[in-house]
Structure formats: C-alpha cells, structure tokens
Image 1 (cartoon, rainbow, N blue to C red):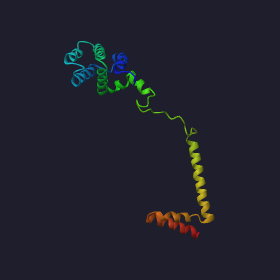
Image 2 (spheres, helix red, strand yellow):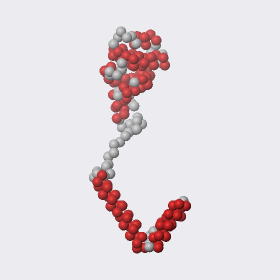
Image 3 (cartoon, rainbow, N blue to C red):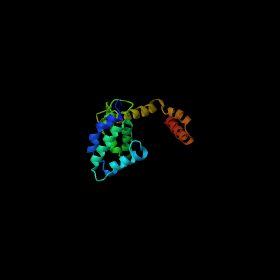
Image 4 (cartoon, rainbow, N blue to C red):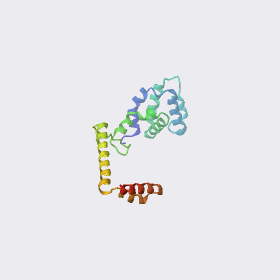
Length: 180
C-alpha cells in the first residue's frame, strides 16, 4: 500500500464527515466495536464521550477520527476494520479504497480488463449468412459423396463405438445407401 492507515484516515476524514450514510446508529456501532473488541484503543470513558447524543453525529465522528489518528496506526486500522464490518458500502467508496482499487498494483485486487478486441463487429446477419453457407457446403459434401462413392460407409465404421440402438440405425442407413 505504501502509506500508513493513519495517513489514509487523514485523507478519508473529509469524506467520512460529509457522508450522509453514516448516521447516528452506524457511528455508535463502530464506536462500540472499537470499545468492546479493542478497549486499549477506545476506553469506556472515551466511548461514552463519543456516543453522546447531544452532540451532532458529524462532530462526534470528526472528534473520533482525530482521537484515533492520535492513537496511532493500529487504532486507525481497527477503525477501518469496524467500518468494513458495519458499513461496507461506505468502506468501499472511501477515496483511499477507490485509489487502491484503481491502482496498477496486481497484489491489491484482481484487475478486470475490458475486452479490447471485438471478434466480429458485422452483426448477426453476417453470422447467419456464414453459418448458412457452411451448412450448405456440409450438405453438398455429404450427399454428393454418397451418390459418387457410397460415402455412407463411413457411418458403418462410426457405428463400431456406439450403443446397440445407434449401431442398428447407422448400419441400416449404410446398407440402404449401398443398395441404392
């Protein structure tokens, strides 16, 4: 990645404070996640302060982000984990996540490349015309060979590897072709 989680959080702070998808309930879930799972990052007293409903959500979120940046890189990483767990759509729309996804780093995420070459841009009528021509040539070859050289003998040889009913049909067809 190159940059620390603290630097990423510093860059994402403006986006997170402006994002309307982070309502009071979601901010509380993230605060409780940090408090319960990682009490060394967010103590009970700090969690109570950041969950104060008298303060607007954007202000509480801004104070929480500033507090986490002061705690260090590990606290910022755990904030990203909690955000990913509770508000996945916001997590994937963060500016640092978008930049990471769009980067050319092959280890970051698998790249999906758009198809560059179009095999046939002539349309469906061209395909049908070519297909019809190929079918016509196959009919001419098949029926032309049967009239000239008794070409249905190949069907008798093909019947060797098939089941009993298919063998009977192909051998019958071969015998009928020889009689004509």
